[in-house]
Length: 450
Image 1 (spheres, rainbow, N blue to C red):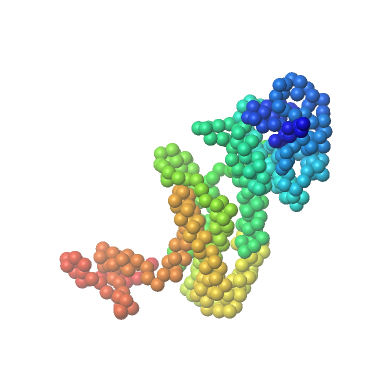
Image 2: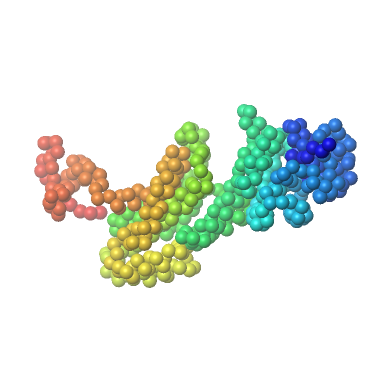
């Protein structure tokens, strides 16, 4: 008669490991228990696990032989070198498609490394946070699995069965990697393509920097941004010269808004947003949409910057070589970006280029990103997430590409309340005032551009 094989193995028979095994047993799963000090296995079977379906293993080879395929092996050992040691011993005993689960709350960079290394061998790795202490492990922890998503279907039933329940729903679902871990990965990938730049690079580095307690430092920094004045001065210059440098202006205003920390905290308790605030679509596809939205918005920001330089040069009689200026920013500069070379090429082709957005390269790049850009902005609006730079960049883009804008109504209003005059489409250059009410008279104010 064939002996029943285990659904999952667990290595590490300290209190957390023992309690998780007993929890799994209570929910009908057959668990193979192993500990480096084998005598602990016997003690556990003769005491806490007596009269259960827990299966003991005398060695790692014995443990693996007693498992169903795909084999699922969970480690509940001290984070660090002990995890690596057990993985190194397990790999020769496992086959492609088998799964190693680390439940020891390891440092996320170790989880990244293990996930990648095991994937190359055809073995899946899951790193799972286990929250709730000894009692949680015994009667229902909160579980936060992430890593190789292909392994989740083989683990999901066990994890969701043993987890804590809230409103009858399991306190366990696929997290992927931790959010900060994911963001590090995202920015690292983005820094290898068209988004390669100083700010993407340092954002990647910030995402992987931990405080002394091992938790991401960025999560502990007060969300109130300061400023030295360069953004403000640029915004003031754009107003003086009548150039819509909307992204820098919005960036400055966003910092100002962030500084209202106490007001925002109070408002958050009194003002409600939309009823739905969680994205429910394809996360991987949406991350790619965000990448494209960022790329398109960056192009618009550079286009606006060169618009301001062009107008300033015109007003002050400067002769600027815009292509050479772009190359000056390729190193040692906060606005360093991989497409500065494309900006130089654009101005080399056409030194009188009125806007980067009509250069063939940038025109095509934005066209490729446009659908993603619109999905990101519209989704953010529906979920109540402020995306000031993306939104203002898209508004500028749509305004710039529009043959007709509703500014005719604005000009009519200005003429109505202040006799500021307007130009007709059929007689440009001629400024006209209309007595809109029949009582205002025909005297107009002087025409000027501020």
